[in-house]
Length: 350
Image (cartoon, rainbow, N blue to C red):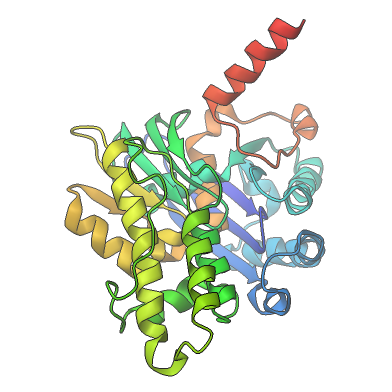
């Protein structure tokens, strides 16, 4: 049974996992060991992620975490079959830190590397806890990305639509910053909203009438800023829960509306990414849609288990040593459609 080491350093969480499982998907993979370091407390001072600081902390924590998972699993590095590592998308400095760690281990063990798109890993993480067949409709909602994908198999993801400006997670964090709630604000807003009235303050839904599955959250955030500027004497003690609930409702309604346009008849829906842990989003989607599956909350945020899990599913495409030492990282997400468009554009220029 193959054993995969997963390394995730795309943003501010350093996470390493050892996982074993069957290639034929006959049973759920087993997480042998998972070790993580979160930079939440460090980054609260700046109200968000600082790429240079995040990369330095990854550099300090990655090696001890790798040692820790091997100790927990009572395994030696040469007993693994491959190293899965996030190579895109994300912050380039943090991505390179994780990739260089993977390459160092590959040099020591002569093991292959599996480059991982961590957005795809977010929704494929459903296989850690559920048996789900292809194809399915995937919705990724995270701090940096919000998009809809038609997933035909572990190697074929068709981009259907996504945010044209900010992601849902950004809307939560930036809204929380305007409200002085601290970082990360998504779970704070979720908690406060649980006792609030979501209908009290109206907030706009971006691209509401576009009848496609593209998203926009910049107007929602701007509307909150405008509200606060026009109401400087806003009663935080009595009305903050209502305001958080109303702001959250606009984000959730937008995602639900656009999921309706993305949905394909007869296909199950999989929701993953950090925002997929939001309690209101889960409740609304379960009310409005059938056959909707959520990645388990413990696997929603960036984590090594989802990387190792997706790496197991891509094991036949692993890049052997020493060719794997040429693997590079890429900060931006480029769907297959966008890559083909870029290739056609370059060909025309030639």
